[in-house]
Image (cartoon, rainbow, N blue to C red; front, side, top):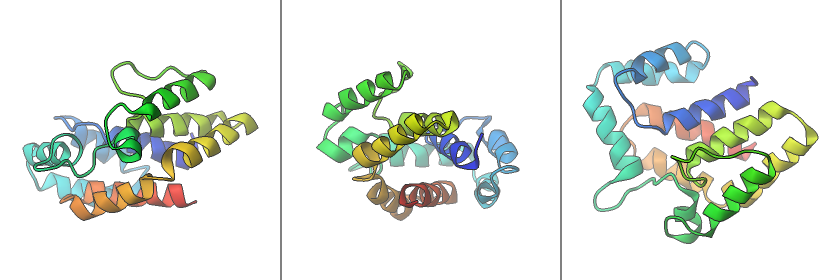
Length: 171
């Protein structure tokens, strides 16, 4: 797997809810992704419940507003399950991919995993599809999303994740 594809796949994973095994998994992943090491060291110093609370506050249910909802439809249309959900579902199908039924097609983790898959395919067609994905479905909101994530997070993990995503989308 290319380093960019591996980073995108990792980013998709990091958007998921942390559990009892997450720190051990991140510790192993930090061997290949050195940028994770400082975040892993920080996470060792806090209880899992604090990490879980930060994840929930940022991505699921912050009060009075969830600062970093990881869904393209929120950022492009201002509401969940907007037209972009159908657009992305069709886009994936055209590329021969069926998204996980438990995660919406416009979930950022789904989009990043799809981008990693396209990079791994390595064909000119996949390259063109990746360019379309970036231009049609990410460039309009992902840079601002990353800035907001950096501003609102209290954990280095999510700050460093946003930096990795900013570097990828700007490339």
